[in-house]
Image (tube, rainbow, N blue to C red):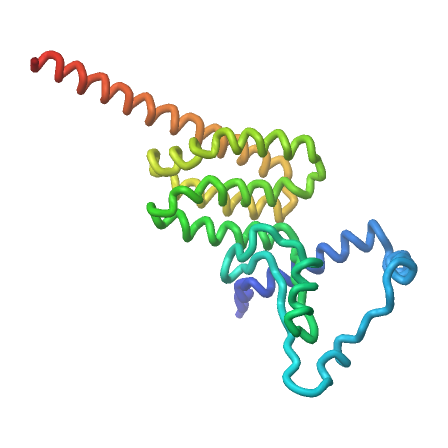
Length: 229
């Protein structure tokens, strides 16, 4: 009798993503070379255990930009300056989470899904949509490309909100965002690019269609009013 595999939870995915990341980085920079670079550039570590053995209550403060359970916590994340502030506030040690982009994208997507359920939060939909997509694009290391699409996004953010709100396209957008994230995790570039093109094209066509229908409806109503006079 076969026993079905246990479904992966968020911790399983974190461990899996971290192992894959470490494996890729070891191929780029072997551990021995990394140790040599660290020894030359950084002072000796202060000692995590010794920081917790002093008198009184010793606090371990945590820093992270996003959480898979809570979603996006802090839009602007500068670990060094935040760590200095926590040290000044009395933290004995710091736990700093600078997780891979896929987990950050997942956290942003969780926040985005929750916000899409609330019509009174429509003003933030475009911003969260950009944060999700830009997180996936960021590791391409193409600053000019990122600057271009950011400018396009800034100019058209209101149309993103209109498309989601007027076309009732939230369900499809959520499904495509989750699928896009999975394809990026699987490193399926061809399928991810194909889905992204379809995602953008559907948003364009659906918004164009609903605006045309509204204009026709308005013109028809105005025509009826003129005839009634």
